[in-house]
Image (tube, rainbow, N blue to C red; front, side):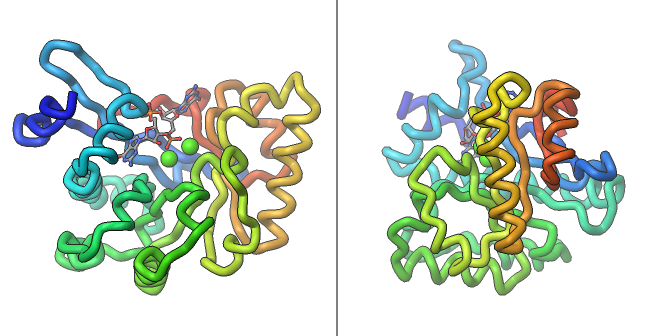
Length: 241
Ligand code: C2E
Ligand code: CA
Ligand code: CA
């Protein structure tokens, strides 16, 4: 798979899908998450959960992550035209990408070249990145923040949630992991967890996106709990741009 991954970029086997992120109170599409897709010539569609860890381990994630970013922003102007000036793309950035020595492919420079703003970009990171922050990582995060890029913590609640760092790094969004959202209509504990995350986030000045919303009942409960944004099959599956 490593060899196939090496060829995949050159042979244009990757594509992106976009999944709308809905502002719950208004029902409006306000953001979209970019998700990579790999169409393998023999094996068909391979899930990112299968190949991203391999790309990380074998030093291929930088090139792949950069490709996802460039491909995403290519679609940004038309999305802005449809959804409004404040539309944002949410791009996943692996912790491994933060570790590389020099950032040759400067995302911010690329945005400026296209006359786009940092405000139109959200970077999704995982909790682990903030747990043991080194200069290399924090400098990059602050640089993004200074350019108006927002930061979201992905899969919130599944890792070692280090609450102190939420404040220190001026995180903008918590994305409640799908595993907490899945059973909120039947499991009072999961509902209580979602409510607690929402209250805590709001007290800290952060906004909340619920992931994996698949039914109207889940949407209604999250809206009543004050959740800001939601994403999931109920609204739309990840779709070609
Ligand atoms: P993630 O960042 O948590 O992305 C959300 C995943 O949940 C996506 O899976 C999406 O298709 C799926 N999903 C969305 N709505 C629903 C729903 O209502 N129900 C259910 N059951 N699932 C839903 P996907 O596209 O297979 O991606 C899996 C993971 O792979 C992502 O999880 C992310 O960690 C990683 N990934 C995807 N694209 C990239 C990328 O460009 N760069 C990096 N570093 N990681 C990526
Ligand atoms: Ca994500
Ligand atoms: Ca997630």
